[in-house]
Length: 99
Ligand code: FES
Image (tube, rainbow, N blue to C red; front, side, top):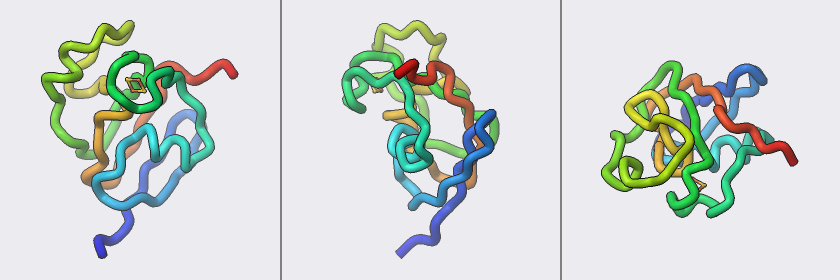
């Protein structure tokens, strides 16, 4: 079993420990942080934007490039449901859920 790695959410200052490979939408849920995610992690709605401040996540994908998102997605601005944590990371939710 891989050791757990910390993911810190800013500005909330909440850190959760997750297994490598967990996506950031799931990590946010475990941290109790709600974010817009109408498609529930299917990579379709483009709402779950997250900024990678520090750390290594899975590479930006062609799927993300094709999603119609209000965010300018790229290496540091990702869909949380498509970015899998590969090292200790610090991130910021761009579109926190209003509900
Ligand atoms: S939750 Fe819809 S694209 Fe990530």
